Image 1 (tube, one colour):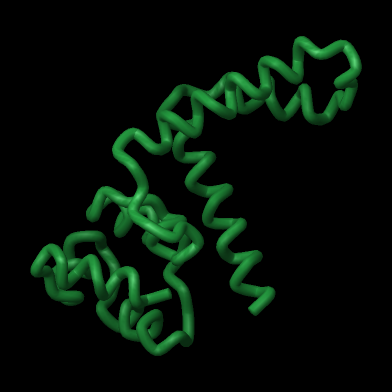
Image 2 (image 1 turned 90 degrees about the vertical axis):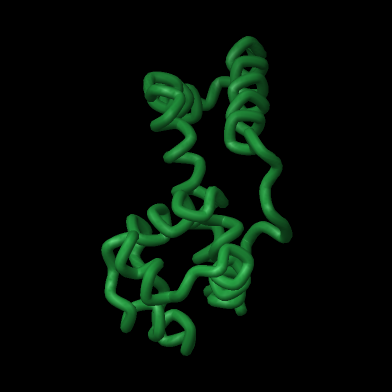
Length: 131
């Protein structure tokens, strides 16, 4: 998974030391990630992803390519449309799903995008466990 970070560092002409300093993590954490011994905590992955303007999913390797600009917004719009259609369907009666949608919908757009990034991260961890 470190390959994506290494590629971003080279593309932007930034050293691992500088990145670590700017996102508030130790260079040894990046080194451990590079060796495959660990993955940084989610909050650090978010900071690194924000630094390079990519998603956590891209950074961890669960997205095949760099996301399109506005990708989270487009995904959020599709998800919201799909869920609204489901809510309007009288045969869709899963109460927990309705409650989850209401909970998600109560978040600000910024928090919804953050929740989606976290879900992508969890999916990437789950996929990595299968390897």
